[in-house]
Length: 190
Image (cartoon, rainbow, N blue to C red; front, side, top):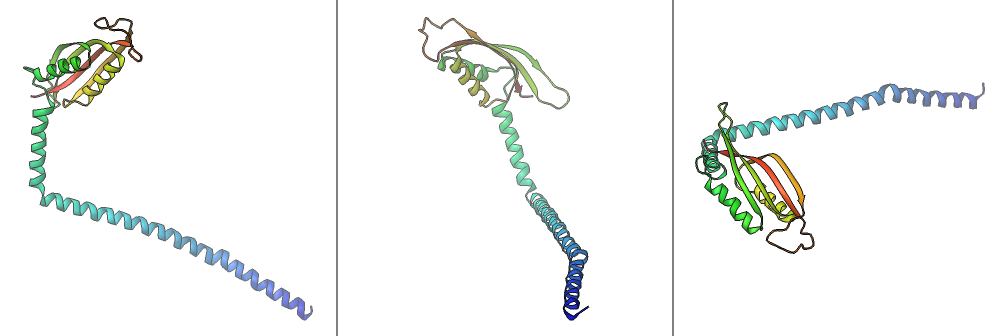
């Protein structure tokens, strides 16, 4: 073997040794470092989350009376404004009359029953609503009912097409008439 061949073999051996060193030592070390870095980042996030919860809890402890007063005030407001009076649901029925006249609907509302829950849930009254009017007006009424101040749960809802017009009106563009049959539950005061 001459000098040149020895040189090439030596260079090849050194390159091969460096590659083996890289594949078996450096590459696994880099992977371990990357894995440890990800784990460290997760631990830091968990620690930051725990610190935030601890600070929030301390804040809650310091301001407990303030929060308790606010919750009591909110509950009173809910009782006063969002729940109907089961004895005399006048304001709720007046809402229907007012919206029916504003939207040119013929609505009938029938109180069905008062349901008193013994297991800690809220009491509620059931109502049945029947009516006629233009489809667009019925949809507006449903939207106003949904966004009203009372807590309402829809039990059943049917809407049917109708060929009749109200008060001898001439049919207009987009003025298709419909009939609505709706059953709702409205949460009531204790």
